[in-house]
Image 1 (tube, rainbow, N blue to C red):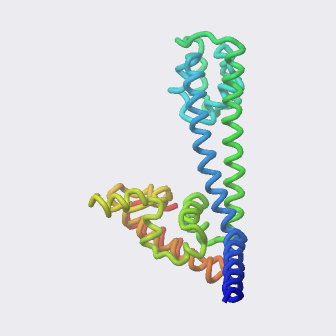
Image 2 (cartoon, rainbow, N blue to C red; image 1 turned 60 degrees about the vertical axis):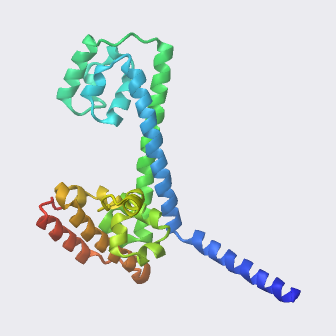
Image 3 (cartoon, rainbow, N blue to C red; image 1 turned 45 degrees about the vertical axis):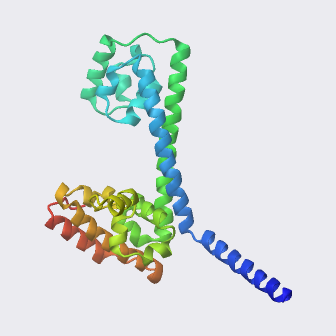
Length: 270
């Protein structure tokens, strides 16, 4: 009896090891990790930018209202530093909008901000540099994500895009699980909180999750986003099945159908 129990135990351990190895061997797991890191980079960047904006705003508060691009704001704060350095030629080296550059130069000379010590300004500039480095790392990671998804799930990449497709894959847990999901599930994947609230409290059911960030969904009117998301979820489901079962890039029919549906709903063709 003891020998049979030991044999069964060894078989179960062996099977568990095989499943763990299979789970972490797939390339889709690297895509999932990259999506997780991408989200963390965005969160940290946003926190750093807010700190730079508030700190540097004590010295040059008008810059925030005149520069809507976070990356450009950080570049100006890091490269120019003291507002007395905000000359038109120097601003144009980091900001292509010449009209805005001229206005920034004028505001820099009339700013209501307080003077800043070199030691304090050095810390602000270092913080801005760290935020810029995070933004650059994010760009490298997005390129890696696109390259990896091109190998793992090229059809999902073509239909959903790297960010939306990667988030769906990460939420599903694997390409296999994603391929088994119907389009209605992929449509609301990422809206679990709203779905649970609907089931528990009877609130309105969610019409879209991660797919809301897709340009075709964002491009239609608010009252038509649910219909566009439904079509997109169905096409992503087909693309995932082609990637997992077919191993061949062939999504032209899905892309054409999405464009036709977007035109029917009054959205821009993208």
